[in-house]
Length: 149
Image (tube, rainbow, N blue to C red; front, side, top):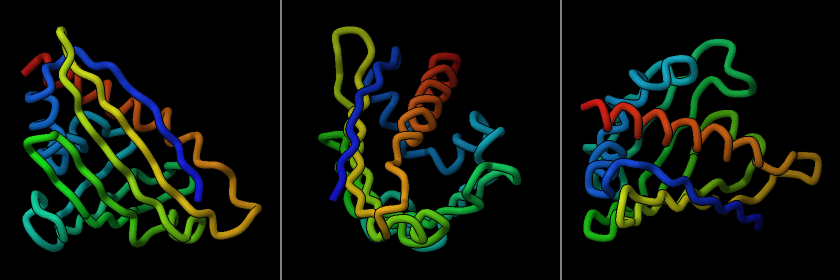
């Protein structure tokens, strides 16, 4: 089992950034149009464990057309989210792909603590290091959007 962890500092207060993440199905296609075409909640309300959503990526996005995610934990009080990718191209490369997200308040702004637990389908599968760049860009886009709102 592999682990990838990193932190992203944002200027938005933790409560505001957390609310933005909760509304990511609506916000992400607006703020990240070069990557995310749509986010559709297909089971549940998107705010409770067991909810499932499908992210459709813009045509031409390298290596991925869609990802189906299942929410495992949503803790508003601690601003913590855990979800697993359960379908899509990622599941051809990784037997398991579980993301942990935690938004921590700072004196000014907040820190997004992002972690990934994964198991590669084979030794030939590359480490998912490129995810760090994509997630960091998404968080920075969300931060800029929230600061303008």
